[in-house]
Amino acid sequence: MDDRVAAACIQGLGAWDGPSALGRCVFPRSSSTPTRSMNEPETLSDLWTTLVNAHTPGVVHFNQLLAAGEVNRLIEDFVALAAPAG
Image (cartoon, rainbow, N blue to C red; front, side, top):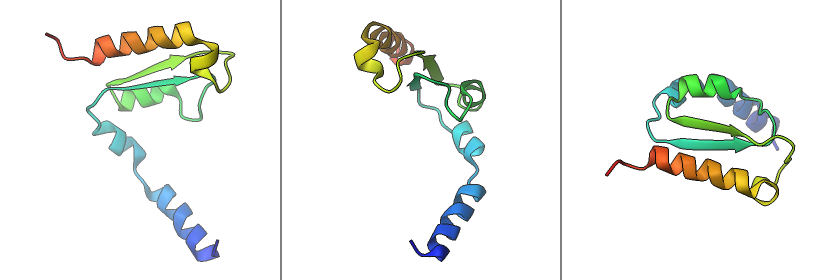
């Protein structure tokens, strides 16, 4: 990759206002991670009020294979929360 392209990418990432973008999100979103991500779930939830965070410790990468019961419960809870009433 050309150094100018790489530099422009890094500058663009640094200039992006992620918190503002998240604050404008109004649709529900579920996030399930086996480990703590680099973005703290509590901080993301403060910015994106319809974000539901879940944590499946010890599963590494294959959440739906290694923690199927927990993942299914999380999905069911999220659908119940996100689905329109009626």
